[in-house]
Image (cartoon, rainbow, N blue to C red):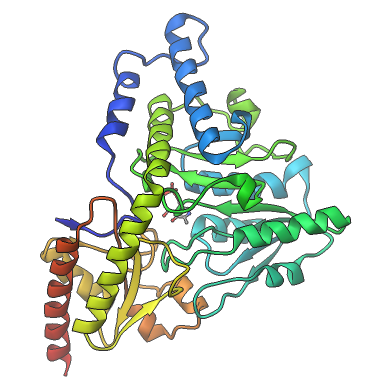
Amino acid sequence: MIYLDHAATTPLDPRVRDAMLPFLHESWGNASSIYQHGQQARHAIDTARETIAAELHCDPREIIFTSSGTESDNLALRGVLRAGGATAGHLITTTIEHPAVLRTAQDLEKDGLAATYLPVDEHGLVTAEQVTAAIRPDTKLVSIMLANNEVGTIEPIREIGKMIEKRRERGEPAPLLHTDAVQGAGSIDLNVKHLKVDLLSLSAHKCYGPKGIGCLFVRQGVQLRPMQTGGGHEHRQRAGTENVAGIVGFATALQLANKSCAIETARQTELRDYFIQQLQKEISNATLHGHPTDRLPNNVCISFAGIEAESLLLRLDFAGICASSGSACSSGSLEPSHVLLAMGIDTETAHSAIRFTLGKDTTKDELSTVVTETKKIIDNLRHLTS
Ligand code: PLP
């Protein structure tokens, strides 16, 4: 199998699995128990929290463990907008967010809160100026993703953060800034001070960690309304017995991802550009989507004129190649990607776009094979319909 769907999920790194195993076998205690067996689990969680905080350049008390990137996004949006029991307030986001943000924003709107969805340009970019123009006196939160999961475009979060910081210094209305950084782990610097964000979402399974564990960075002083009622876990912000093995695995995965970030980014960028160049050389009418340079090092979102993405994906699957159309969550439905449509791409082209996402084990040989197989399939499909 050639796996080119790392934006959907990544395999568990064996080093991460080894770090998790003791907490699935001998050290299975509840971290809230006062006896030693439970305290081993507590110690492991504390250490993992410190590791993640060091990677993000924040205080360990600013990390809340959740079940996923989806939950982190929900907690950021619902938590901030509903803080103090508020029933009014305004949110700024974009039209290309992951459904975890988009549908949450829409749900908040149903409850009477206001939301502005900023449009993007043809590369999927928003600007700090657009955000500035959308800020109202009642704007509580700006939520913009660090990098898009479908087209890989990297958004100017630091610039937006700087703009908000300046407004705060001048005493102007200055909302909090949240970024969904789920796709950025391992390829973008996640230093929250550098990014100037107040909240940041992450998910372990996108960086060779286990599924079902994520976290939300919440800058100290930010008021959140918890989504769950229950025990006092996670500084009373997220009730529920902790997923100890998941938390330990997440910390190990993030540490490993950050350690290899520079080398992997350079390696994957070179492979990505080779792959794009070969696809466009071998196959006619192949259009790359997303930003030409400000894009994730592993993302190749490309459409082939006249080809239904689903037909191509099925045939690639027969050839042992895994890729996807749109995001993992929306594939399966035949709706064209909301991201591509928001970028002004017509419906037919959006229907023919497929996403290849490279990973740390992807090789040039694999990519050459994928080019050959894709060309064969497309020649065949185009022949059938001509
Ligand atoms: N945000 C982005 C940008 C994503 O790509 C994903 C997953 O595809 C999520 C959030 C959701 O993360 P999880 O799968 O951990 O719920």
